[in-house]
Length: 132
Image (cartoon, rainbow, N blue to C red):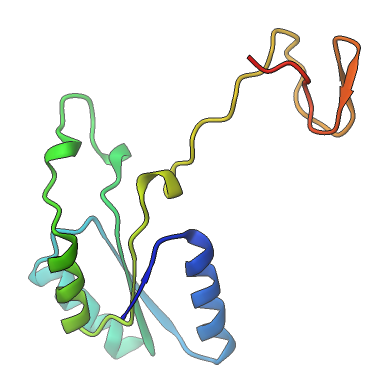
């Protein structure tokens, strides 16, 4: 079973299978796999040629006061369950892959980035030349 950790890996994986005429059944999860997840993986295997699951504990699904850090995680156990359920691959990204760091802030000129934008007398290829 393949373990994919980047969106680019998933794109290449999907392109390779689609290019060969295979259908992919996708089962998104937040891990802590249980019988319901495994049943979905089995159904995906009956309906598609390749089963791809994701295991991603999404921090945006937790509100203030909810304990993202305490959500159960058993990566090795989940991978073993997914393998036994017939998954061909699992997408297991780190949070930074799904939510890259925020872009730097614009300076006070408030010019939106565009090609060859002048900012306070300077021209840059990506926009404002003064980042905060």
